[in-house]
Amino acid sequence: MAVPKRKTSRSKRGFRRSADALKQPTYVEDKDSGELRRPHHVDLKTGMYRGRQILQPKDDV
Image 1 (cartoon, rainbow, N blue to C red):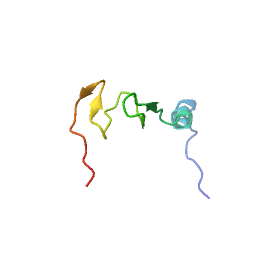
Image 2 (image 1 turned 180 degrees about the vertical axis):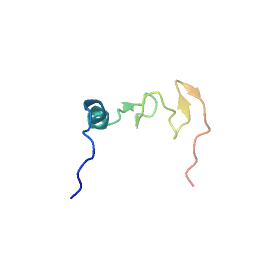
Image 3 (image 1 turned 120 degrees about the vertical axis):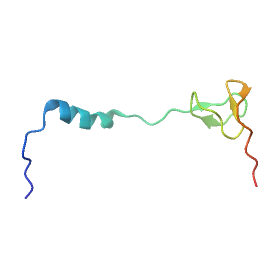
């Protein structure tokens, strides 16, 4: 049977458990297209970010 050699400190235990508090990523509704997208990210379908054209929109092939 595996037995820990050393006691896990409260700090190490807390670092490990900090991932338990992570939440699901949030999404906002795009003003122009009405689709959901991540906040502060470029919309990859339209290529728009904050009202400006940043990328060329993807063409469906």
